[in-house]
Image: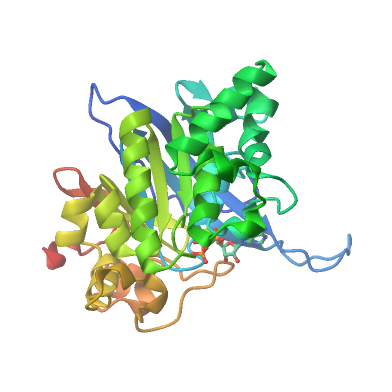
Length: 347
Ligand SMILES: Nc1ncnc2c1ncn2[C@@H]1O[C@H](COP(=O)(O)OP(=O)(O)OP(=O)(O)O)[C@@H](O)[C@H]1O
Ligand code: SF4
Ligand SMILES: [Mg+2]
């Protein structure tokens, strides 16, 4: 439901494949998620309502069968965006179509969650410790598919096998599994309904580096075998580079750069992306984690963000126009978009 009382920053028009003939499984247009700040109840208060602008006008198109990585520092709105796409949190405004159908609160949840599933960062909190693996994996099938018990059992065992677990794991509790095995269970649950799109929110960041590589390779195999589309949220540039076809860079609730991953990583054009990539060249590529990066200046407030370009207080290229006018995303070379007034200077 659009909230007309909220000021719009409207600087972030569509990124993604707009090419004719490209089959986009997800089209998200001008998504906003503003969380109201509650300061105690006072109906007579004349104070202007305030909001956390977690997602502040994001548009994306995700081509079927591909992986779109979303990269950005902590608090930039990645999880909120994923939760809004999956309707786990209601949008403030914006429009989403998934597999040709508009997603809104009236949509049939069976259609939505058969087609779209999510894997969360921490399996310890996303798996019910009291349920056996077979029941965890069966949960979405039981809720969404009208099948016999035998059919559900066979779907469950197929998913368990597909993620590299053996039938004997089916009767264990999560507490009797390693971190990597738990994440395999979370993935088995996500693919059990044979979805088309899986949103992976930091799926390996809680795991050791060796296990991380195994899980990433498993995800690549599953994508090929099941023709899955992924939205992969990550802090890690190497993970984004290894896994994704397209890369979206978010800053303070906005998309600031977008394009084919190889191009954005090898030739970033937005000053923020340039800083991220420059601050992450450490010897072990699997540790190129944005949580460890240090970009000069403070992360902007999500409640009172800087005017104009939100990156202007930290940007080495900033000029006076940058604090006055928010830049629009524009194509800087074939398929690569950046929102910066002075993007020519970064060529
Ligand atoms: N339920 C909520 N109520 C109020 N503010 C929230 C809520 N959830 C998230 N936020 C705020 O929205 C902003 C974006 O949060 P979000 O969790 O989407 O970031 P993120 O990019 O996923 O961060 P991280 O990388 O740490 O997971 C942050 O300022 C956060 O504090
Ligand atoms: S618009 Fe200005 S402040 Fe923003 S990234 Fe470009 S140069 Fe920097
Ligand atoms: Mg998050």
